[in-house]
Amino acid sequence: MSERRIDLPISELPDKWYNIAADLPRPMDPPLHPGTGEPIGPDDLAPLFPMALIMQEVSTERWHEIPDEVRDIYKIWRPTPMVRARRLEKALDTPAHIYYKNEGYSPAGSHKPNTAVAQAYYNKAEGITRITTETGAGQWGSALAFAGTFFDMDITVYMVRISFDQKPYRKLLMNVWGARCFPSPSDQTEFGRKILSEDPDSPGSLGIAISEAVEDAAKRDDTHYSLGSVLNHVMLHQTVVGLEAKKQMELAGEYPDVVIGCHGGGSNFSGFSFPFAHDKLTEGKQIKILAAEPEASPTLTRGPYAYDFGDTAGMTPLMRMYTLGHGFVPAPIHAGGLRYHGAAPLVSLLVNEGVIEAQAYDQLACYEAAVLFARTEGLVSAPETAHAIRAAIVEALDAKEAGEERVIIFNWSGHGLLDLAGYDAYFAGRLQKYSLSDEDLTKSLAELPKPGA
Image (cartoon, rainbow, N blue to C red; front, top):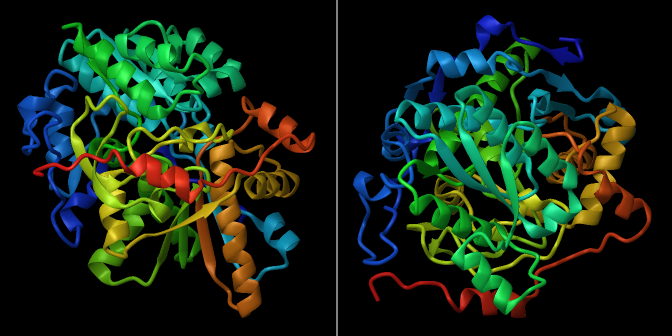
C-alpha cells in the first residue's frame, strides 16, 4: 500500500475494549491492603472508585463493551490516523518501514481522554459529582478536565510542581475546561503541607501528587479519585488505540516486527501494545514489544519486581510491580509524564515473563530524535513521546545495519505544542542529561515495604 496516511471510517471505531488479563501467561499477584498486608477485595476500593471500574479492575473477561455515550464522545476525534513516516525513513536511509499512530488528534492533545471520558462516565452513573486526580506533565489533568465538561463533574487536579512551573499552559488548559489545578506538594492537604515543611523547594513527584489526590477524595462522600495510568481498568480503556492500529496495519498490508511506546505508568504503552501482545501470547507471533523509558526514572530497566505502594504516603494498596521505591523523587526532566516510581502491574508481569522488553534513554537523545521527527514529519512531539521516537530510530538504524526490512510501529502519544520550554532549553544548551545513580537507587529501595514479614 503506497498511501502515507491510513484512516479508518467512524464505523470502524471499536465497540469493545480488550482485556489482556484473559491471556496472561500466569495469574496476577493480588493487590494488598496497605494496613493489613492481606489481599484486598472490591469493597476495599469502593470509597475511591465506582463499582463498575472496580469490576473492570479485577475482571479476567477478554472483551468489555464500550458504553454508547462514551463511544459517541470518542467520535469527536477517533479513529485516529496511522501514518507511514516516509520522510523519516529517507532521512535515516533505512530499509525499515516506520509507522506511527497519531494520538495527538484528541482535544487534549494526547491519548489520555480515552480513559478520562470512560472514568467520568462511570463516576457520573454512580452519582459522584466531584473527582480528584494527580497529573505529571499535565496531559492527564487536562484530559480529565475535558471529560468533566461532558458529565458536569467538578475536577480538582494536583499537578507535580516542577511541571506546574515548566508548563503553565497545561494548567490554563485545565482552567478553560473548568477544573482547578494546584501545584503539588500543595498547602491543600495534610500530606502536601508535611512535604513542604520538610522541603519547601520540593519539585514534587507523581507519588506525592497521588497521595494528595487520594487524601482529598477520602474526606468527601461526593468525591472519588481517578488515576490516569497504572491500574488495570486504565489499560483496558486505552486498548481502543491498539485495536484501531491492528485494523490499520491490515489495510497497509503489513504486520509489525517491533511495537513501541513510551513508558511512565504504562497507559499509552499498554493501550497501543496489548492488542499486539495478544497475538504474541495466543498465536505465537514473533514480535518485539518495547517500552521506552527515561534514564532518570528507569523503573522497568533497573527497578526490582516487588510489592510497593503506588503513592509516596503509603495510602494506596500495595501492588506487585517494577519500582524504584515509593519515596523516589526523579530528577526534573521535561518528560513529566514519565517521572513515576512504579509501573503498571500488567506491564510489570509481562516484562517479568519476557513478553515485553524495556530500554531507557536520556532526555538529550530523545530531544534530538524529536527535532529530527519535527523536521521530517512536521509534528512537534511531547517530551514523553520523544522517547518512543528515539526507540523507533534506534530500531530503524539497527535494521539498516543488519540490512533487514523491518516493520516498526510506535504510538505518537501526544503533541508538544504546550511543552516548548523544553525545546527552548534544548536549543540553548541548558538541558541536562540525568541518569539515576546506583547510590540514589539503593537509598530509595531501602524503604520498600515487606508484606508478610
